[in-house]
Image (cartoon, rainbow, N blue to C red; front, side, top):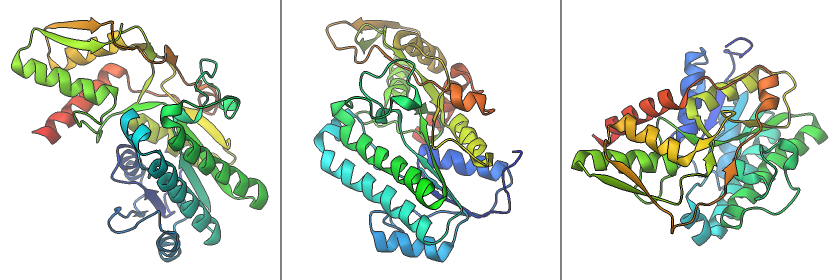
Length: 312
């Protein structure tokens, strides 16, 4: 990738997750071979001393923070204290250690849930902190807001090149396909795959199928992150999204076609729909020279291949 410094040492926190692993692949493809990683068993990022010692010893030039405690609505609602504490400590320990040990550049990754529940659509970066958050993931969002603000303040106060990116809903290689704890696309991939294997005639979907959702392929996010790392003066906060959304019903039909489910999709309209629309405004990063390139059809095909390879 033009402008990416291949002679630098990159530390990718959270390299085993879907996002972190995509960033590692993108760095390798770009010729950045000097990558530092550590599993959660090897390094507890919630422990300030461990995080500080690791950054001091490994001495990375660039740090990408993709590590986080994540979960669905149930987990976020049930364990808000852990979601706030763990994510707050991960962000604080790494960003402070980066400053203490003179890491040149930090890219902190957040989530679209940092924005207000009723933010104007598409959601712009300047809507941050303008009104209240979605209660079910407030703890996670507050930790991510603290991380991005810490980057912003180290940049303002000390001139550090620390900045943040907020991805839209993600899917792709290395996703979580757990029957209960996965997000929409991996959950539907599993459900339609199993229905196709059983030759079911119908699959029931909650709600009307009309809510609009935006999904970004994780490897596209990785390319967007690498693009930000080439910019000499990136925005402190920038959205990274696909730039368009589709009705859940249409996405479900695409997934059914991808996995070969030939039955009928039935909507249970007695169940709630959720937020009518959640679209990120990605015009800022588009204006800086990056745009998502993977179509949803192609991304779903690659995700399903990954599901088959892992589920066997």
